[in-house]
Image 1 (cartoon, protein in one colour):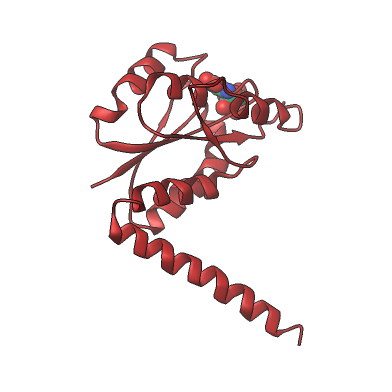
Image 2 (cartoon, protein in one colour):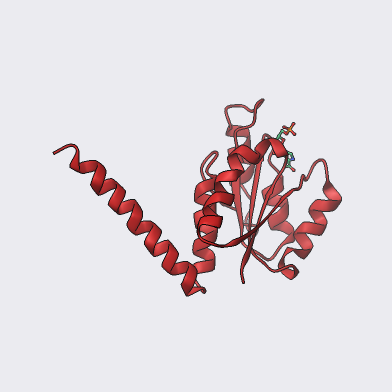
Amino acid sequence: MSKVGVIMGSKSDLPVMQDAIDILKGFEIEVEVDIVSAHRTPDKLFDYGKNAHTRGFSVIIAGAGGAAHLPGMIASLSPLPVIGVPVKSSNSIDGWDSVLSILQMPGGVPVATVALNGAKNAGILAAQIIGAQDTGVRDKIIAYKEGLKTKVNESAKDLK
Ligand SMILES: Nc1c(C(=O)O)ncn1[C@@H]1O[C@H](COP(=O)(O)O)[C@@H](O)[C@H]1O
């Protein structure tokens, strides 16, 4: 079974990253959560990035704030797709520091960057990557999208 690694630079990122964990669990996808920091735990970062694909992960979601080097460094080490979540941390420059650090990767080392604090979309994107091969997960995504459509249509009824 596919597993998603959700990592973040600090436990202070957890309130944001929880959205990715929750939506993945809603799709019944196994999630393993950890704190990994390029700056504070560089040895752990190297170990995680080099070995994630041998540990049953299919996708890695990496969230960090400020000088957010974690997603890019993981992408440099791992053959797995990496989804980056810019986190608006407490002393950030309105989140722009994180957005630009994660978004502006050099050619050859992609990180699929979602919106600032966009962990929910990171979870959905990870599920969609898994669903490209796994029809059970794909069906859950189809149902999820149907749910979105129904919600919008229901909300529009009040306007008539
Ligand atoms: N950007 C990084 C990295 C990294 O990129 O490796 N490690 C920690 N951090 C970020 O520092 C911010 C403040 O962390 P603390 O709240 O622990 O001081 C967090 O948003 C974290 O993601």
